[in-house]
Length: 182
Image 1 (spheres, rainbow, N blue to C red):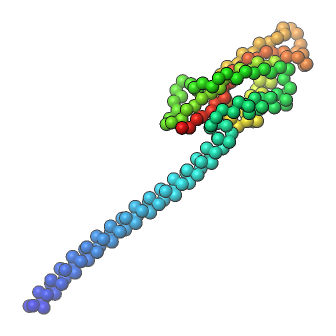
Image 2 (image 1 turned 180 degrees about the vertical axis):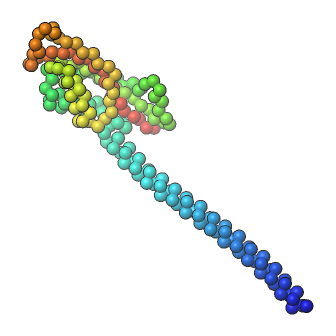
Image 3 (image 1 turned 30 degrees about the horizontal axis):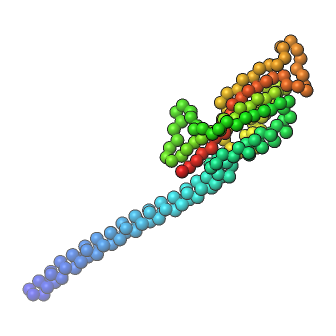
């Protein structure tokens, strides 16, 4: 009887010990899984950060992020004009101002600014305007928007187009956009 009693007590103690060890094991497995998930999230965040950092560095190198680069805008405009050989091209840069568009609200601590540039272009034909804008887009990787353009014909409709002088006078306002991330 004593042996049965001791055996029963040992079985109960052994069962309780096994349950305690099983709970520790389940806790350790749960902690391992959560640590593995945190590690995976950190790796994903590092990859995402690297991806955004390279994009940010590209934007910074192009001049979209940081201080405005007026000289590079003017150089880009003049080099595009050297290729197109427009009869006349004059420009004036206005002071930098806050970039405002309906429905546009920058998030976080980002300040989006724009510098208006007034262009006065003497063109042989309408395609010169599109060639100028495309040339600007290709020669400088900065962001600009076209606010407005007006085009007036300098000669009468009944006259033929002159291939050496401006046939159209165009006035455009474009905005060079820069982002200042605080």
